[in-house]
Image 1 (tube, rainbow, N blue to C red):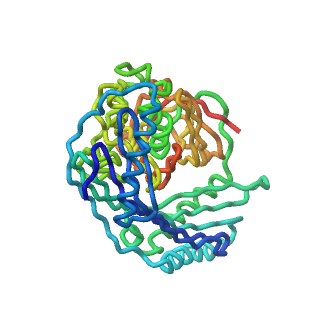
Image 2 (image 1 turned 180 degrees about the vertical axis):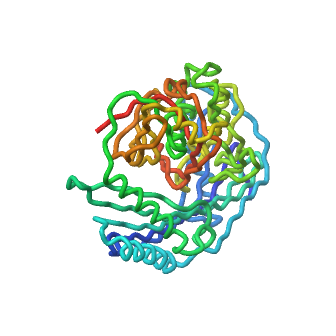
Image 3 (image 1 turned 135 degrees about the horizontal axis):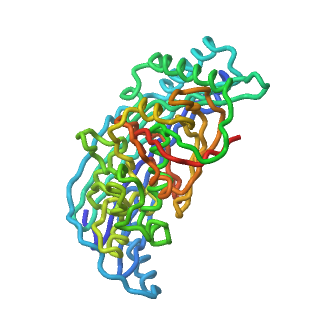
Length: 450
């Protein structure tokens, strides 16, 4: 197929499956599929975009023509003419995964067996729910500069939500997500493998039911890797997306300046980790046809770079990082994080806790938000007091907040272990699967209290 100059053509199929039980009742049993073709063409100074759910050769040709016509129309009304985008070398890239998806009944049986186990073993629960979900993105992209890429990226997760009554007559909740990239059969051998993990979740919930609220104020805290990943993504990662930098993000003022403790190195990984293993959501090529490579955001505490599309790379005089991605076939590519993480340090978690006279160890977060100033607030749904270097009582729900580049300067220890979280979506204009990770972090942070 002949691709017109300065054009990207993408054929894409997204699928999702979801089964949910609430208190033993089936409340969701869905399976969806969305597919189509899109084209994006650069004419003069701007892009034109078009898409269609029909992927026949005739429809594909019509989409490419519509994208070119749209570009010409928009360029005729553009006030400024931009320079030529950075040249990129085309490549043939392919990432295959198991195409054999489970039948919907298998998702249903899996969720029902896990829910039945919880109902039998923990009848004292005030409420419970179990969800098993899976999604995949299958993309084939061709560009006029020679890129031909194909990728299939499935992932599958089980969500367990538990609610318990407390001695004071209220309720507390706790949940956990289990799973990874891959199909149902690749990720889970059977529901029984989750039974011990559900038991551990229940025991934490019982401790939380007896828990206390932390004291409001700024404290020395140890953040579990789950929170470090959220911090890397929400509070720092978004500020380093080059389109947000152009819109006024705080990172615009700090390039090549200290923004964190010298212990902090943060990278948005494309596809391969330092030990040679595959990142949770590997991206070999972005939806502009650019071969993806790592974006080093912070190196030894210094802000060293941003995540780029071809357009923002042109503006800053940098190389594109392959960070422009689209969620659906009818979406245009935006700069998006891929696998954003703080690299581990050399400390042991027990030593990090032992060095805190009075503070908190926060282990689970249920939400997070940040703005382009780097100011953040995360919900904390599980944690423990630290008194004289030892863990104390469990905590009820609270929040932590601060300004990322200020808080990161207080980091004095990083654990030598590492955890990835990859079940969620980032909601920047269009949802997108992302990975986030890090070690445990010891720092000073504001705690919301009750």
